[in-house]
Amino acid sequence: MATKGEQFAGLTVALVTPFQDGKIDEAALRKLVDYHVEQGADCISPVGTTGESPTLSHDEHEQVISTVCDQAAGRIKVMAGTGSNSTAEAIRLTRFAKEAGADGALMVAPYYNKPMQDGFYLHFKSVAEAVDIPIVLYNIPGRTAKNIEPETITRLAEVPNIVAIKESTGSMDQASQIIATTDLPVVSGHDRLPVLLMRLDGRGVASVVGNIVPRDVKAMIDAFNKGDITAARAQHQKLFPLCRDLLSMATNPIPIKAAMKILGRDRGELRLPMTPLTESQEKSLAETLRTYGLL
Image 1: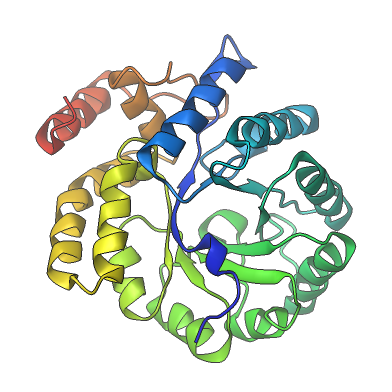
Image 2 (image 1 turned 135 degrees about the vertical axis):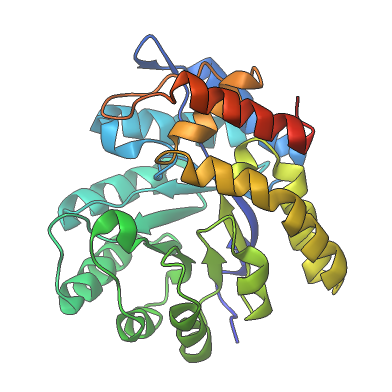
């Protein structure tokens, strides 16, 4: 049924934020953008959960968005994280993203203050009316402490520039209801679920594991879209152990940054309160990467 927001179908990589000695490593961030252009990702999403947005200052948040948009230079779509638990702040960040040249804004549900469903509706509607940019809703109650209910999402789908949803509840019931009652493309926020979601008419994945194997994730999506379910399933089965370990060993983005460090693609530096993997966890992760064929 989905008709709008198709520009955000396919593979979106939930981009990490590289640090060096506590500061944003802008050169490394630009290299990451180039890497995903070369690898054929459809879109990159800076300063989301994987980008450690809660530990960035407002200035740093804007620095990451402007750097990514500048380096992307129209070669790849940019869906910038601009959510907040303050509606005024979300409007300000979304305005900045539009001025920086982002193709869309990824807007997480207001976290911690646990709005009522009307509060969710009015929050997203207010941002959408204030800033003329395509907005992708981001529902991840495991992080935000409250679900945006399907009925609220159905109401929000009537707002013209709310164009898609990153669905991270893990609930196929919820995804099915959104797909049945709205024209919003549903993008999986779980690396382990895109094939299952695409069978329900989902439109792809916003992927953490895509930071290290974007071609493989893209191949899975492309195989499914071509009707080659056998190839899509085989690719999913290959990816599954890697996704499982990267997302269950510790809180995201701790394991993906560790994997990138092991592979020589990032320093693996995190900001408190995020802490590195233990030595034994890192050895286990290296074994997973070796089994996959990355080492």
